[in-house]
Image 1 (tube, helix red, strand yellow):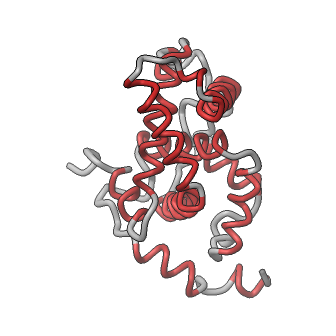
Image 2 (cartoon, rainbow, N blue to C red; image 1 turned 135 degrees about the vertical axis):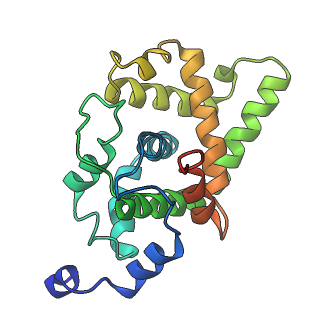
Amino acid sequence: MTASLINGPMSESLMGIIESLPHPGIVGDACPRRTKVELDLILLAIEAIESGSSEQMLQLAKELNLSEIIKNRIVLWRMRSTNPMRRAHTRRILSIKEAKALSAISCRLASRLAVPIRQLLQAEQQLSDKQIPPEYNFRLSEYLDRFRAHFRSRMNPRRAKVSIYQEDDKLNELAISLLTKLLFCTGTLGTQRLWMSLFDGEVK
């Protein structure tokens, strides 16, 4: 991307993504806590589904002309570190524009992973109906193992919101609930659906 594009007016693609998502109606430009947590956990689940997803996030930022917002790996890390559950939590705000960019990337990746997401949810449902542990399905077990590893390596166990996930069963429940949210993100209106859900209960 050329310097003139980065420093000049917003690209047409970026403008389309930003303008297609309505302002959530909150006061100011800083996203609330729940929005920051939800976006980071959704991306964490994507990383657990498919290795190398973090690289795809940066590639998608370029493809969607979002490099004006997500310039590089460090910027992406700083945006995700606004999640107060993280070990490396930073006190910088996550702006509405940044949250829109993360939402667009999350939904595009979810759409690409729609088949494995459905397969994982179907496997979980079948095992749950028969009261069989998830370890009996290789792909589901692998996803849950990766998610637990990612969560425990990146989240601060001293945080009250993190301590409730000490047991594997609790983390497995979180991982499955995130698969459901990712499925919610697929489809033509996936980004809009995710975006509005991130601010449920925040508008007073």
